[in-house]
Image (cartoon, rainbow, N blue to C red; front, side, top):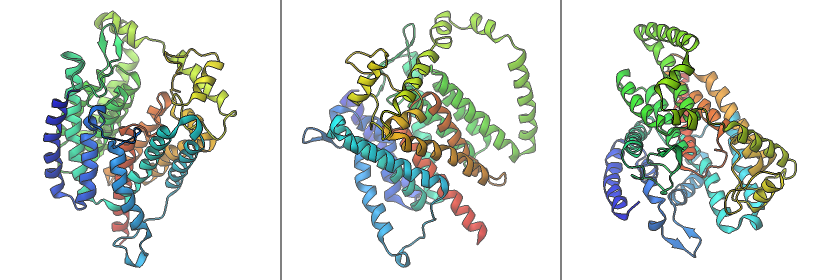
Length: 448
């Protein structure tokens, strides 16, 4: 990405962030988050990151953590009588979250010799950031702050969706973060939008679809349908099957929940669900796909066998866990992991690097030990159970949490989001904190 594009993007984003935060209650924190969210695609470019000591560079998440963590710690140290607000006790899933962060940091730290200082510092700060992002959003942001964040999410979502479509139809390298190009089939590439990976782009738009679809702010459902259509098209051109399934889950979930608002939507939803099931059962999909879609797309992408490799990687993970019960701290970034990958009989990539484990739950156990893997799985599944129990039809916003949990669980079945090395899983933690905080606020207000 050229420095000219980076400069133009920042010139537009910075005043936009300042304009959005004028309606926020906690302006400094919301402004920091929105700047991190919206400027991240260009701030991660190697050519503009200042380096210190040859290995320490001012990455976006590191900069944000250096500002937010001290404020969070100081606020917690203030005597309760002097605090401006009281903090809710930890719920069951939040205890799993704390255990996951602690176990992951411990596993990374004890593998210092094999990973090296750069990977240790980067890994620890990203795992710590997940917990910091969650609790800062949960405890310090208000309903008005969430609305401002939603607007920022929509703006970046629209931009990323348009970028993805341009990457597919016009220029595959347009605003491509990191510059990497991955083929989907034939000479067609996977669109990544404003993110480094197609999975991150798709997951971001899935989060945005859920948050915007269920957040009550006076917009009619048709506005959400327009955004969801744009987002859906850009998810399709990632040419990844799990993102398709995750996005479809979000669409169906929002429609099922929203239809209870209005009798017309309820009846339409029932009819459309019945017709959809009939089509799935009755239509000869294999013949339709072969006839209407390009053969290279069908054979090169839709029918591509990636299951065999994924099963082999998963079996390798199960074999590896008892050998390193405390974890390796990393997967492909660990020399030990890559050597064991070779010893197991799997083919290495160029440079002697293995492949990632395409399952977040197994990867968590390999990275952060058996305890860390259990904590990661416990965090997501208890989050789903606890939030589903608290969801009520009279407050549709409470359904955001179980849908977010379902999407995170679904993605981790075939991808590795156990380590919070990317922007999207950190955003997921922030959104979890936002809507947990909103749910707690609603419960306190109803109980008053």
